Amino acid sequence: MADLTPYEAIGGEAVVAQLTDRFYELMASVPQFAGIRAMHPADLKESRDKLFMFLSGWLGGPDLYVQNIGHPMLRRRHMPFAIGEAERDQWVACMVLAMEEVGIEPAMRQRLLQSFFNTADFMRNREG
Ligand code: HEM
Figure 1 (tube, rainbow, N blue to C red):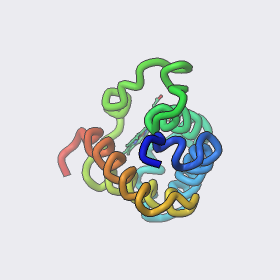
Figure 2 (figure 1 turned 180 degrees about the vertical axis):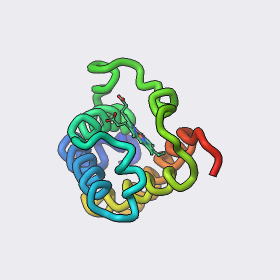
Figure 3 (figure 1 turned 135 degrees about the vertical axis):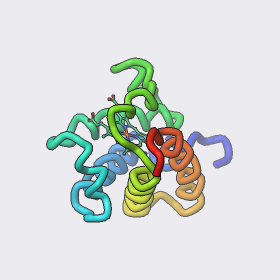
Figure 4 (figure 1 turned 90 degrees about the vertical axis):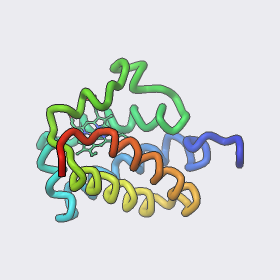
């Protein structure tokens, strides 16, 4: 297992797709995530497709975002949205639930949680 990428270890494209679907379904349905849901467009399909492409490369699989859209420049792309600790924590909590629900095993979940938290924390652009 040690030399598998996270992408391979969690089950490849099918599981990354399930994870992304579940992430946005939870964001749209769990009241705790209403704050970040409201920042997104009414139709979440494009958000879902972009996150799927991004996570594919970020987890060590095909770099679909770069191939289809270009350099992610994630921090810059998040500047239009006011992201503080509350928004960061909602995003990460939503992803943790999605990881649990698609059955990513606890050790891998813990490892990915660290990386998701660091990336989400880097996106903060407002105090509080
Ligand atoms: C910290 C809390 C975060 C909030 C509140 C947030 C919110 C948003 C919003 C409102 C959009 C625009 C959606 C759209 O245009 O369809 C977006 C886009 C995106 N987010 Fe986040 N996000 C957060 C963290 C993250 C993290 C941690 C990642 C990656 C691990 C990520 C990856 C993306 C990607 C790939 C896009 C699409 C960028 C584009 O092509 O326009 N976001 N995010």
